[in-house]
Amino acid sequence: MSSAILDLFSTISDLEVVTDALELEQYRRDKSGQKSSTPPSLVVKPRSVEAVQEVMRHAFAHNIAIVPRGGGSGLAGGALASQREVVVDLSSLNSILEISPEDRLARVQAGVINAELNARAEECGLWFAPDPASRPWSTVGGNIATNAGGLLCAKYGVTRESVLELSVVMSDGRLITMGHRSVKGVTGLDLCQLMIGSEGTLGVIVEATVKLLPLEQHPVWTIQATFPDAQRAARACLEVTKAGFTPAMLELIDETAYPLIAAYVGESDSTDGQAVVVCQTNGASSEEHRRAIEEIFSTYGGSASRVAAGEEAEALLALRRAMHPAMESHGTVLIEDVAVPRSRMEAMFREIRTLESRFGFPIPTVAHAADGNLHPNFLFEGDEVPSEIWEAAGALFRAALGHGGTLTGEHGVGLLKKRWLSEELGDEQWGLQRAIKNVFDPTGILNPGKVF
Picture 1 (cartoon, rainbow, N blue to C red):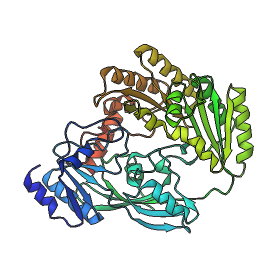
Picture 2 (cartoon, rainbow, N blue to C red; picture 1 turned 120 degrees about the horizontal axis):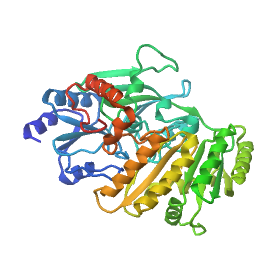
Picture 3 (tube, helix red, strand yellow; picture 1 turned 120 degrees about the vertical axis):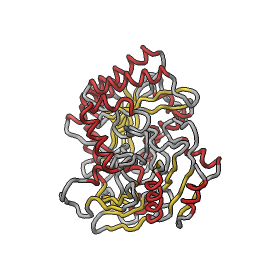
Picture 4 (cartoon, rainbow, N blue to C red; picture 1 turned 60 degrees about the vertical axis):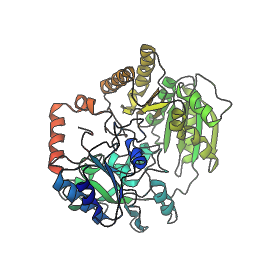
């Protein structure tokens, strides 16, 4: 990056400019297991929305590539940056501007940590539903940019369902507010929803107004059940939804992943060859639903090994929440993210077992079983994904598409999946989406090389 460009950004007030080589090195990675070929040329940390606008005005005028970044918890390589790119790190925009119990909403800056918003909301008898595994360190802006999912999606939806209004800095520095603070609003095209999940390719999200929900007033029950294998566990989970139940959580850990995670959390009574389902019920009928679900599990070969309510239930969730660190303890992890119709989840586990036999390596998999979202994990050593793993991943993606599914349920496209994007969208829709990006980003400076 030329000294002239560095001097240009250094004139902006409310902006920290990072040039230290060790600190720049951190921006080559996110949680995807990938690493850019070089560090970014520069990182800027704006402390006000006006500073973000100034950054984008300069970038637009001088054709400087910009990579927006939140907490760096992304799993698709969407916030990686390299030479000749400037990272806009939004973590310093971290103010909770308003919590309204009357309107059940919060207005926050993009860098607010998800869990911190939840803690503040709880003081008002409310909570923020999006629950990605990265909640303790992911930012609300990053959750929105990737349309993050998590453990509670089947009942409460992905991040999209919790967003009312966004303030976005466009590629030329204009600040635009999209959406509505009101519960309803249908004026014109819904640009707010278009921005959600756009992965920094359409604008820089700086502020959000999000929905909050009342805290649960009834007991929350959690079941941990074991099954002979993932296919029978998937069948049981399908029967739960067919019976009309919508659990708050229905998570499946397959027989390949379970021993790795159990060893990591120190469970001494784990048995190889078992799959585990973690189910949570809430609401006025939570105990009644819990008992009915236990019966369904039993009918399909499952055994409810542990059941708990209240604080004791959190210990049962520890197994599922430990998935990512448990996999990381065995090497570099490529965490994939396909989703299929619920009725095809059992078939997808058969496909995964077939791929394990074909390629000769294990593919430990966990799933949000209530909505058909599977996370197969590929383990390897080093920074470069081996060719045979990409080959296996490609076969996995095509299998998901063949079952009426999608390449990504919640992680996004980023760098990792852009080579397969046109296979799902088709040429006409792919071209239309490119055209939409060009309207928002005519000079192509926003997160170049990602998604498209």
